[in-house]
Amino acid sequence: MIGAGLSGSAVAHSLAVRGWSVTVLDQAPGVGAGASGLPAGLAAPHVSPDDNVLSRITRAGVQATLQRAQVLLQSGTDWALTGVLEHKLAGKRKLPADPPDQHSAPASAAQIAAAGLPPGTPALWHAQAGWIRPRQLVAAQLQTPGVQVRWGQQVQGIERRGDEWAVTDAQGQTLGQAPFLVVASAFDSLALLRPLPGFAVPLNPLRGQVSFGRLADLTDAQRQRLPPFPVNGHGSFISGVPTPEGPPGWFMGATFERDCTQTPVRVEDHHANQLRLATLLPALGEAMATQFGPDRVHGWAGLRCSLPNRLPAVGPIDALRLPGLCLSTGMGARGISLAVLCGELTAAWLSQEALPLPAALLKHLAAERFASA
Image (cartoon, rainbow, N blue to C red; front, top):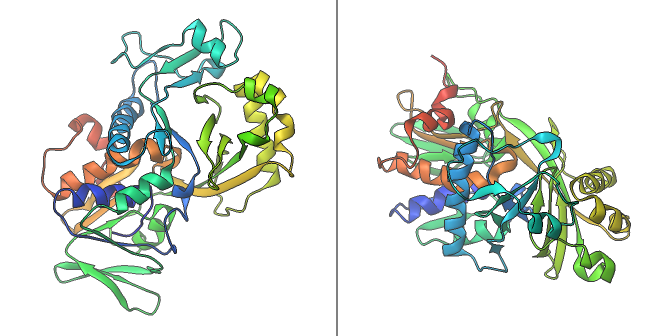
């Protein structure tokens, strides 16, 4: 396995619980150095009037993530099934006329009021949704018996040697060799895969920055306006979740910048998140404007990667020409909602089990869709 982030750790866990021995290589010194270091994020479904492919896949993904969190994480500290209110800005994210389940519905007047939004604000309520601290999920998945992690491994190439795949460093030294290899190294996957014959996955870098602060630094008036549950729709606002330093905090973001591979925290992106909050929750945004000042606000930035149709590339790349080589990447801003499901799919493919999604949906995720003839 190359990559010990959300995607790689999810695949490693899914394989290990099936009895596989998994070695994970990562260039970082420890957990959470990349996009999986996001301090807090949401597992929440995507909805659409026609219940499109993305909606159906994210619904299955959120269910898988919440089930995994319930088993591996501490509720209230690492994650919480809070429900999520979605502010329907610009008329987006309508429910189907005949919703496929009862977990997403128009928000009630009480829920809209609790969020601090005016009566009649168009909003949805997702009952099967909540916040997660990705770093905690990654760490828990990597601690699964059967998973060995080797940090500080600078992978530069992959090559087929007989019936096995070899992973090498910049000096050509072999870092690992096995019959099966899963590449789950986000945007870095592109450089590893590009030399392979007949395959080109169109991964794009996607930078995101989150702004956050401590609840203790808010005034009483600001704290009184905090919604009791996360709100999304134009970025997301989450409060009451531990900050990386430990004390509970608030989080707003993330920004969404394509074709950028730089991750330093930027002042202008804090301003962008302030404007997002003012649109998402106008009353709270006005009350918290002072919290985005450079002497108060904290930030985190990371690099995700996406594919043109907003769906990941998962599973075998080319079973005939590249046997034993799998991929799990391209989840964009939905890594929390999709990584566990993609891990289960990859493990089921390698273990020759029945796949946990209908064939009509699998074809939209399969990495083989990018293989050339």
